[in-house]
Image (cartoon, rainbow, N blue to C red; front, side, top):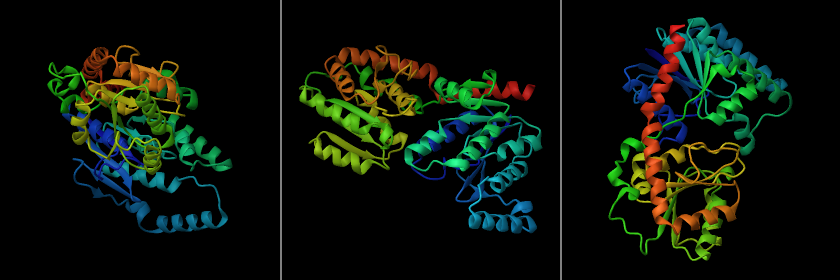
Length: 411
């Protein structure tokens, strides 16, 4: 099958190393589909240009003569000038038209288009209709909630307009793949799409392949626990909803309760300076290590030698981050924020512990509980690894996508 993987919004730039979480997701999905024998071409917008790649290493800029050259380009420039001067609503129409035409031009011969959803991006729908092939959308989160959390959400009429445009774009798709059951439920409720057209497909983790069981502390027969300082790891960002301050205060509480722990924070970005300041204020400088932004190959051995993986989301409605899959693949017992059956990737008491979000005391108690019971901690880690092998490889993800694509193409 020939698959066009498209990203009009360009949020996940697979050209830049180290890869962000979303970019790594895109890369791993494409590689896994290729490993199943499919041809996958990537078309994405980055740096205000459209780029094409067949191998994820070489990228060619795409020019669309109809809109990049001649009278249409002049009309676009004039329209943009008027829009800016009069502060008229922004439709993203020219960008979506250009991207749709680029898809039709560069992805000719494809059997299906698979698009990572971007906010107010609807060129993929144009292209699918012109090319007469199915469009499958990939839902990975709540765009409005994310924009609100970082303070750049649209307001007033512009917000209503963008929501209306997104609703039309969502309902134009032949099918939607949601990265988890909760995202599936949210998508159906938010956009009014027929539930039969939305399928939950969990993401994968490359650590299933990168780490052999023999490398994992939870599987080592000679891993001593007497006098062992329990190592907690966190992989992710430092935005307020990631809950790093909650984690740091819980760790301070565990130390006060007499536990010997150390923490490795893997990641970088907005909020890191505040986390470092809080570390100093809590006198945790000798306990907490800021490892920076690492690739999966770099942080895999760190996770393999750790004891507990932590996902302390706070103020977020969905808690099944990719970090939990990495923890499971590394054979770690996970402590994760959650409620109302979330996150489904952690089985409470079997592969980890689920605590209420933003609850420092509950997180502290969970840390203390697993520190004091290394045997149970290892049992959880081993069960988590088995679950990752069965359900969280990227090949498993790709095979689920393959089934959906085959059904749509056969219709």
